[in-house]
Each structure stands twice: as structure tokens, then as C-alpha cells.
Image (cartoon, rainbow, N blue to C red):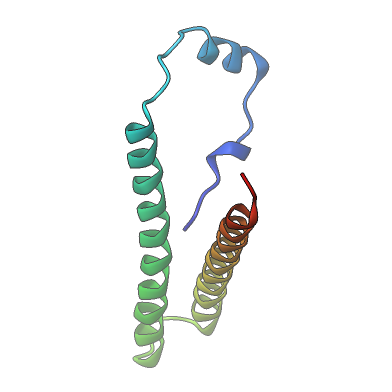
Length: 103
């Protein structure tokens, strides 16, 4: 599942303490690697949710799971996939907008 760590609640005291140690800025290569690993984790999470839906569905077919479990797992996977496709669409739109810019 994709989790947004940017929206987590942080108290002002905790944010001040976290901001106190000045960490040197990441190089472009480090930032790219970090983003790539974050993106890979997010896509792996979506794939894991899809696999979990198949597992719960198989358990339902043999009578070990409730229909509610199947529906919840399917809904979560569907929402994750929809979010992923919307993010992809926005990235493509941003790329196309950058390509239209004149220098």
C-alpha cells in the first residue's frame, strides 16, 4: 500500500528537534536513487495488495474466508491501483508540459 509520510502528524516541538541537526543536501544521484527506491516500494506494495486479493479469493473459494474479507481486500487493491494510475497520468502531464516550454 502506498503510504504518504508527508501528511503524518508531527508536533511543533518534534519538528524543531528534527530540523536542528543540519544535514548536508543530497546529491542529485542520491536524490534520484532515493526517489527510485521509494517508487519501487510503492509499486511493490500495489503488487502485494493484488496478490493478497488472489490469496483471499482462493481462501474464500475453499470456505476459509468471509465475503467481507474478499470485498475489503479487492476495494483496497482497486483504490491503490487507481491512485497509481492517477499519479502516472499527472507525471505524464507534467512531462508533456515541460516539453512544451520554450527556453
